Length: 355
Image (cartoon, rainbow, N blue to C red):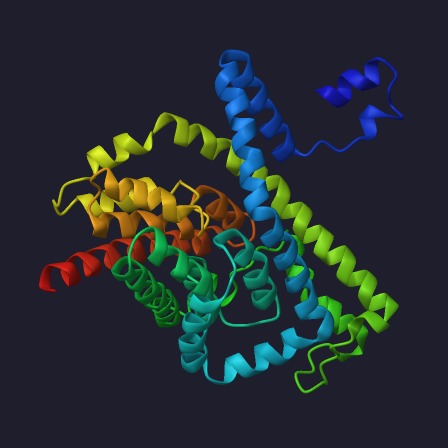
């Protein structure tokens, strides 16, 4: 309608030719509506959006460059060939490496997509995808300082176990079509593999890796374009997700969550995971949040389930996954994240009961 109106008033050479992105339009309309009906909440959402991007932006930049660099060097082909030879061992290593990597849940996505585009099986990628945002050495130290050593240790162990669970559950159904070919066909990530292939070694897993890819101008330009394409793709979807999340947080205060999930009934842990799923918890920002919930009376197993669900299947992460993989793959990812959160919550509760 906007383009038709522009045409009627003679703007056929300007506004009528400007492509309108539906994601940015939805973000603008949502913010404008909130500001119109609740100015305080609207400005609060803008503040939340700015704070979220301050936390996430460095990870998005690094992961976009890294995912494009994997293809530019030719490492994607070599990784694909190596990981295909022994998927079980690759899944084990991916789960452990994921727990040691410094990437948050959002920034893991373009890296995982680059590996999938190169032909790496979904099982090890899923192990890395799920385990990576849950812990790293810095988070461990900070968790010990803010909460305590037992919770930090539980977070580390459950990060590795969650990755293993996700990876081997995926391996068990590896022959299903949406597991064998998980990426959608209409996103920029599916072109990652062509960066290296276009340089003369398409499909050659034994071709040498060119670590100094910046010496090749054509390769460097492709890297720049691919990294920007990935970053731009992530920015628009994450911006919308952060705005929606700010509204969820405003409507569901932490004190109410702790009061509801403070008991030790069997349903508290799955309910905590369900509440945590739409809530984005950056690995570092999650620590004081969880500590506050624990001090308000939240049961430790429920707190751990809330944390895992919030980091693996949060709204920004889930939205980013949704737009790069097939629908059934997306629901499989959500199911794995939710099951891991619930299972680790019960495991931690059991561990505390017997110790």
